[in-house]
Amino acid sequence: MLIEEQLATIQFLTQEIGPRPATSAAEARAAAYVNSRMRQAGMEVDLQTFRTVPTESIPRGILYLLMAAAPFVYLYSRPAALGMAVLALVVFLAEQLAWPILSSWLPGGKSQNVVGTRPAAQDGRQHLIVMAHVDSGRANLLFHPRLAGSYHRFYLLVVLAMVLLPILIGLGWLIGEAWLWYVQMAPTGIVVLALLLLLHQEIIMRWVPGANDNASGVAVLLNLAEELQGLQHTTLWLAATGSKEAGLHGARSFLRHYPFPRDNTYLINLDTVGHGQLGIMVWEGALLARRADPRLVELAGAAESRDITVDADPRVYHETNTDAQIALARGLKAMSIVALEDGRPAFRHWYNDTQENIRPELLERTARLVVGIARQLDRQAAG
Image (tube, rainbow, N blue to C red; front, side, top):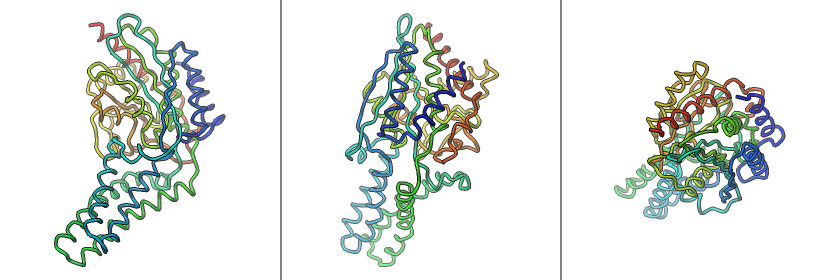
């Protein structure tokens, strides 16, 4: 495992290129770098382009605004207010559960996935996809080191407020009590606060270098292009996705473009693997927890037990959604590998997400874990 090459990848992505917002020229330059490295490793490479919103704040902000306006529309038309609130809630939940409605209709820019493939040496009986996103995010006040863990708690509070508002509006319409309008102001205030935080993020906060999130995952992915050769019965796919931070659009576009069979396709997602305790995510999801594929979890545990240097623990992850959510929502066998510190990815969406905070040995351990899983899958496919 060449740690020097992995660190060189992180340095190029975070210092030579810098922050890599979705749909930006910097993201495209990072994709070109990945493309070149995959070709150097002898892989067949496809550059898959797609259009997407540049930030998740746009569709989410529209839905927050629609929900916050509903109680004021209630003063003039209760049916219209209820319709607005229900529509905002349904679309919001669909977007959060990996089924875009609003974001797919909004104008945006061009992003790209870089997909490297290596056919099985003999007969290809299964597919192994390893995925890592190239883009980096914007800093968010709720990810401030002094507010550790507050992002997910506030997110759940906003979801609760968005569920309560249509219920309260419906009750007010049904029983006609004037005081119910004042009760609606409590969840409305929470939604307005969420909208203000989005505006603060987009106007005040800057884009972060994204060393851990997720240049670390890309560095391991490119290492695997060199390490994972000679698989006899497994077609290898390495997918460097774009626009993850804008709403998982790269993973969605990739799986829509390549309709993999569910029974013999396995997907491993690498995200923020540069600092913390290496973890095998057995359950993940910010709103709806989805279970990782039991076979992949079993193989990861076996690979970890065979290589004492790996040291990865089964964990549960709820902070945010990862690209694996797209695969799990579509019934594919998927699992994420994420390094956590106090239950959260270190330095995520904050300005200290720089190369100086990357632990090189963790990159090597991650690569060893994925190689171990891949070799076992390939041996089992031989029968």
